[in-house]
Amino acid sequence: MKIGITCYPTYGGSGVVATELGLELAERGHEIHFISYAMPMRLSTFHKNIFFHEVDSVDYPLFDYPPYTLSLASKMLEVATYEKLDLLHCHYAIPHSISAFLAKRMSFSHKLKVVTTLHGTDITIVGSSKSFLPITKFAIESNDGVTAVSDYLKKETYKQIGVACPIKIIPNFINTQKFNRNECRIFRETFATNGEKILIHISNFRPVKRTEDIIKIFAQIRNKVSLKLLMVGDGPERSKCEALCRELHACDRIKFLGKQESIRDLLSISDVFIMPSDSESFGLAALEALACGVPVISSNAGGLPEVNVHGETGFTAKIGDTKTMAEHTLTLLQDDTLRKKFAKNGVERSAAFFSVEKIIPQYEDFYQEILG
Ligand code: GMT
Image (cartoon, rainbow, N blue to C red; front, side, top):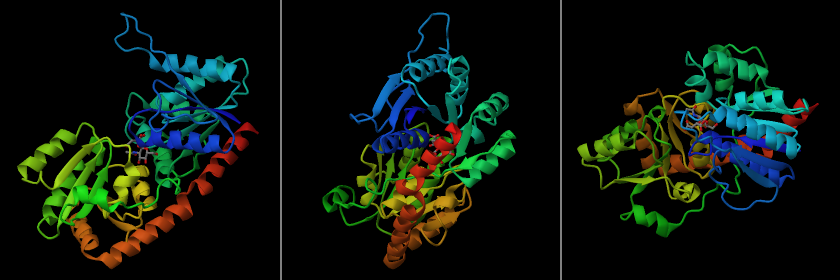
């Protein structure tokens, strides 16, 4: 098949899923054309069967806001026409599925099909906001196929957007060849200089991640266990978290590493992963942690319990309940046997339910169904 994939190229779960999906499909012999305003993260090296098409930005003094949705639609039409695409697969509904709808309507061949994968905030925050709700509903209902990354997100889309079309659940996935534990003792010692345990968080530090909760949790247990905290990623909440660390005199034990490429290496030296989010349709970073043998402490927001099973791969607690999360973190850090058991369960769960071998064929079958 010849497939166009559009996603946000920035640091975020939907872009990662779209890129990894393209890479996996290309490995299986499909021809993949990424269409976006910049090269998606994790795609920087050459790959057979993968092509990138940059969307031109219109720089004209009249525009305070360049009309990206229209530039994207034009580029989608151009690529679909000249590369003879069978299908456009949009990740994140806003504005990609609207651009794809326009490209399809402009296309001479009405055979071009459009699929959208809903990722989370495109429904729960952006899509359900008053100004975007009608266009989100229209876009979803106009597409030839819609998938959601969790059961939770499917239900929220019906509830919040009120769409009247089928939504197929295809969960996010992990390549267990790329994500598995590969612990390097020397690397670990660069952070845990005195043999401390390592607690890790990875995100884009947006308000939904509740990153300040992590510092509060750390403060509750720091005198009970010898511990270092690694905060990986960057975003609007980072400064507030750093200020809180200074206030709590915890800077020597909390390291902010900014955006990092080597996620697997960092997870491999960690003992517990923490994700206290306010809202999470899936929690891809939690799945990456499980695959690397790192038990997860998370909130029970959205689709997180579909990934992190309470009492099996980690613990979940109510959103904002930092006291319970601190207790759970301490339990896992102090009980080596329990931590190892949860780590093993996590590796097994990620392979059994979320491996590329299980999930990519579901996308291929879905495309075939749409193409008739
Ligand atoms: O929330 C983010 O950090 C980014 C966002 C995105 O669209 O890039 O993530 C959403 O999609 C991810 C991949 O499907 C999911 O793992 C995240 O749970 C989801 N985020 C939210 O629902 C808040």
